[in-house]
Image (cartoon, rainbow, N blue to C red; front, side, top):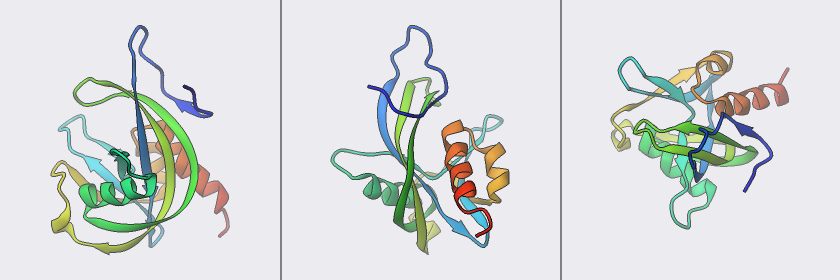
Length: 152
């Protein structure tokens, strides 16, 4: 299978698991919700989101992932695009995340409902997020939003 927009490089001779995903862009006071994933000196920033489980829709996965990673309940509003990202998971597993990037709005925030202890909700200026996000596909989604909303 192929996608129109592929980021990263496949490891030669390695089969990357195709993983359907959904990631979200939520803005508040001009800042973008991101997660800082604590890996000690290897910590990084991602957009909230992740794998679509079972027969979930992208929207259902996005809502679930936001709660798990940030404690935030969101309402997806518009799919802004699709992209894929080759990478190696923290455990070394080769993955190709393929899926939608969504605009969503914050409905509520309950930090006690967050289940991923190594994820921390942080609010970054979109331009800061462009340089700090781990995956090029995530930066592409932010850049796409910025270009579509210039002057808004």
